Image 1: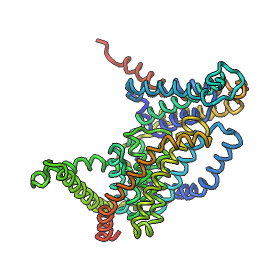
Image 2: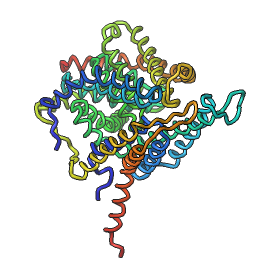
Image 3: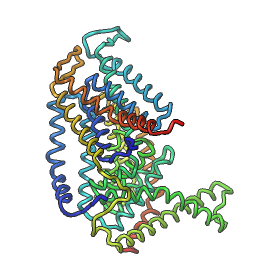
Image 4: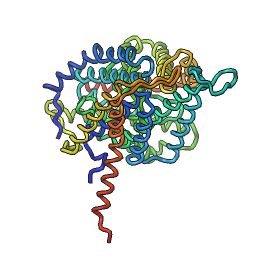
Length: 232
Length: 288
C-alpha cells in the first residue's frame, strides 16, 4: 500500500523543487552542456531539460488544488483528445487543448495538452520525443488559458491563435528533429528541416483552424453550461 | 518466478532510464555498442517485436551511417571524393556512433514501453504527483468508456429511426449528433463522478493505489545494483575523451575498463534476470 499525502514531507519537497528546478537544475544542465560536453550532448541535454520543464509545470499544478470537478472534466477532455489523435491527417489535438484551456483555465489546458501527448504515445510509440510533445502541447494550452479573455471575445483572434500554434508546434518539433537526426543543432539543418516539414506545418495550421471553427462553439456551449449548472 | 517486469516499477524504471540516459550522453563507441546490444536483448526478452520493427531500426541505422559523411566533411582522412566533396573516415565513424546511439535509445524505449504498462506508470506518477496521476488514470479509463458509450448512443439513435446511413449528409449529421450527445453525457457524468469522490472524502486522506507493487529485498537489490552500476559507469567514464574530429583520438585509463564493465552489467541486467528465471522455470518443470 502506498501512502500518498498532500501534506508533510512530500509537499515540502515539491515546494522546494519548484524553486530548485528553474533556478538551479536547468541552468546547471545548460552550463554543463556548454562547458563540459561542448556541443556533443544536445540530445540528452534537451531531453532532460524538456522532461524537467514538464515536471516543473506539473508540480505547479499539483500545488494549486484544481478541485475534483475540474480534474474530472480535464480527464474527459484528455480522453477525447487522445481519441481525436486517431483521426488520419487532421488532428484535433491542439484545437481541443485550446478549447479546454479557454473554458477550464490555463492549468487545465496544460494538463490536457501534456497528458494527451503522454497517453496517446502509448499507442503511437513512446520515445525521447515524448517530453518535447508534452511541453509544446502543454504550453499551447497554458498560453491559450492566459489569453482566454481576448480569445473568447474575438473569434478571429482565436482562429489566428490556432493557426499560429500549429506553426509554432511544428517549428518546435523541427528543433527536435534536427537534434535527433544530427546530434547537434545548426541553423542550416534547421532551415532544411523546417522547409521539408512545411506540408505538415500547413496541415497542422489548417486542421487547427478547421477544428476550432467546427468544435469551438458547440464545445464552448457544453462546457460553459456544465460550469454554470454545477458552479465550477 | 519473478520476471523482469514483475520487479517494483521504481527499480525497473531506474535500471532502464539509467541505461538509456548514459547511452544518450555518450559518444564512446564501446559504450554505444554495449547499449545497442543490451537494448536489443531487453526488447527481445521483454517486448513483442515484429520483424517490421527490426527492419525499421536497421533501415534507420543504415540511413544515419550514410547521411553523416555526405553532409559532414570534417575529418582528416579522405576516403574518396564524391561530387567534388570529400567523404572522410572520421565522419563515417561518427555516423556509425550516432546511428548506434539513436537505434539503441529506440530499442530501450521500446522495451521501456512494453515493461512499463500504464498501471506501473501510474504507480510511479502517483508518488511524484498524486493529483496529476489521478487525472491520468481517469483519462485512461475514459478512453474505452467513450467507445462503449458511442455504441450505446448509436444503437439508441438507430432504434429511434433518427440515424440512417442513407445519404452522406444524413450520415454526417447523425455522427455529429452522436458526438454531441456523447460529449454532454461524458461531461455530466464526470461531474457526478467528482461529486461522488468529494462525498467519499477525496483529498482529505492518503491515497491508496489499486495495484500492489511490493518493494522487497530483490527490488532493493535491482534498484541498488542499477544506481550503483550507473554511478560506477559515470566514475569510470569521467576521465575518457573520445574525439572524432579532426582525427579519431582517444584518451582513457585502466579506470575506463571498470566503467565499461559496470555499464555492461547495467545494460545486461534485464536479459540476465530473464535468462536466470527461464533456467529456473525449466528446472522446476517436470520432464516426465
